[in-house]
Each structure stands twice: as C-alpha cells, then as structure tokens.
Image (tube, rainbow, N blue to C red; front, side):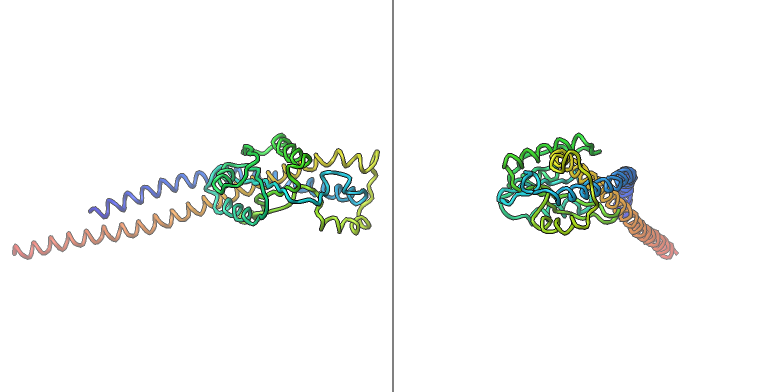
Length: 284
C-alpha cells in the first residue's frame, strides 16, 4: 500500500510540473515567433549597411578614421550577451565556453544576469553591466554602442569583441565570437582593394570621408541592435525547445510510473485474492 501511495504522489507531482513546463513552452513559442521575425527582418538592413560601409572604406584611407582600423591590440574588451534566466538548455553554457577561448588581457562588458554572475565567479575584470530588456530596442542599442565607442576612442580598449548567440533555426543557435571594433581587421583590409574593383558605384555627398564620419556610429548601433535581436530569438527558441523536451519527458515518465503503479496495484490485488482463497481453504 505504501508503494502505491508513493507512486501516486510522484505521478501527481510530475503532472503538475508538466503543466508548468507546457505553459512555459507556449509562452516561449509566442515570444519566439515575434523575436525570430524581428531578427530576420533586420538582417537585410544589416547586410545593406555593411555593403555600403565596405564600399566607402575601399575608397578612403582606413587609418584616418579611429573606428575603422587600429594595429595596437593589447587591451581588449569583450561584450558578453547572455540571458537573465535559465531553463534554456545549453545556450549560456555554450556562450561561456566560447568566452573561455579568449586569451590575453581582457575586460568584460555584460548584458544579462547569467553572464554577469559568470564573470564575477570567474574573477575576471568587469567594466560595465547593462540591463537586458525582454524586447531589445534602438535606445538600448544606442546606450551600449555609445559606451563601446567612447571606450574604444579613449584608448581603454584597442579591440572589442562580442560573444553572443546567433540565431539560425528554431533547433539550432550558435555561440559566436566576432570582432566589433575596430570595424576593419587586417584580413578584411587585404580584401577591400579587390572588392572595390567589383563593387557597385555610389555617389557620396559631400565626400566619402564625411559620409563615413556620420555612418560609423550609426553602423555600430545597428550592429548591436541586430546582435541583440539575434540573441533574443536564440533565447526564446532554446527555451521553447527545452520546455517542450521537458514536457515530453514528463509525459513519458508519467506513463512509466502509471505502468509501475498498475503493476503494483495488480500484485496487491492478486495477493489479497490469494490470502482470501488460502483462508477459505483453511476453514474448510
């Protein structure tokens, strides 16, 4: 009897947990669709501004603009974008692994509580921590980009990387490490000359240098905004998948426990019948 009570209690507890994970799955699915749409829509603009920027950079001397290229790379800043909450599978773990690949003198700027906790426990330098909004917006991107640009121009950092989760599909999100500042690295610089020969012709007023001075801060802001959208889409996708897996596992566990409960119950009934039969035979 004790075994059946214990099994009933476990089945009830798992069913209650399953209701929670199912509700979280539905909520994450709704948020995921919105976040995915935003991330995908923003990619075309990001690709276009990258194309224009590379076209302009091929026509001027990159070293004349402080955000474009810098050879001294001793001091490095890393913008780490994680989540505020868990229950999103291995998303944050993959980001932490990618972060540990970075060597040298590094200071971190974090977005998301999980990243801030990770950096603090790792005893790594933390320069700033920004609040992660559930719905990224341009104002949030502007504040972050302004801080990064000021830190770079002032010489606090001579290189800035960003670690974030790049959204690919609902089932696949990739931890990504990429250089944000300077905008052009040495490898890209070597290809600009070849690209300029094949690039579309643009007319710039008053001149490419003036346009570049205006477009560079906007470029960094839009890149940050797109990265935040990619990270948000990845988070909601990962959480939806994790909660779906949890709900499915709970359903399977309930089925297994129900089978075990029925087996124990049947065994108890059989034992009771045997006891009654044995007693009856003893009386006769």
